[in-house]
Length: 235
Figure 1: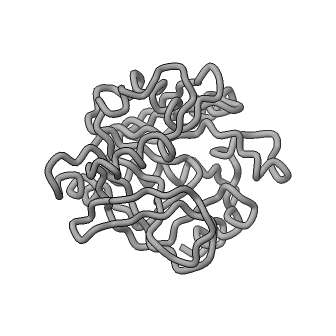
Figure 2: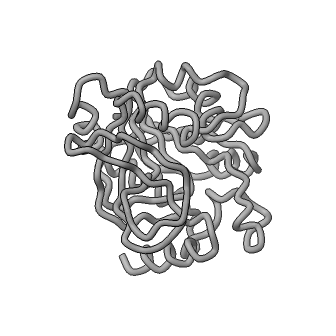
């Protein structure tokens, strides 16, 4: 696994009160852009091509990528012509992601420190016909999460919309997806991986879970950003 596509096209509305002048990926976490933590972790695990699927304030991401050096890796950026959501943005970025198949995809506003890519790859072969795997984290505190039903073979049988839950397995924001699956998404049209792709795969029994220990660091809200800063400062 040498290529990773990081979805950084979101508008970051929940952080606008703190950082209205930049995309979420460049919000500072302990004086370092959040995206730099993600990229460093992926490089440490063998990824050599980091592609940023950008949208909102994409020019800043392009400038940052052009001026920042990560030895042994290259960073590329694509810019969606209009807001396309996670699904549409991923489909637009697909031609820029070499010929990686399956393709590693990550949400650009969360970090799963204990995820290991070799284990994610292994999870893809757990049952026949698996089209994709997502990292699943067990949450034990109340919050708004999309929850997963997982059977004993680590097959996801239901992918539910975000709702207030006390506990359960949730989407960890890291995916390993067949390239032809991504290619079926409509070009140039907004769509959502979470709403339009994963529920369908789960209903068809072809979506697997890679269970990972927490924490899941979601920096998309002021409270989540503070938790992320505290955790990374301590570790």
